Length: 137
Image (cartoon, rainbow, N blue to C red; front, side, top):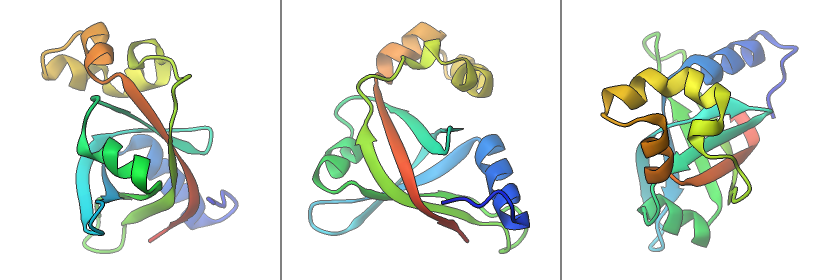
């Protein structure tokens, strides 16, 4: 979990709130890692990701829910944030276009890739949530 009473905890929370792209690591059925860039939202102590249906990451997490999300370093090796945890399909999650915090963070990016918020929500219709078990470097 993330201890917000520590300097590192506050810094990690800030990075999780403001960094645009994280690297999601899942495990393939053969045990090999699979790492993909994702847009995500740090919300209520969990990580929310919207995915296109049928993607390999979804197949991987259905077989093995242990994942990691890593934020790139910004200071030459000393600013990596790594979140390890368990992921689940969040079938009751509102679509991306109806999530104000997600839209505030990614509206410009959604427009840049040629989608309206509704088109994005239709294309990235599978929500997953990561419950962290460890946050660190």
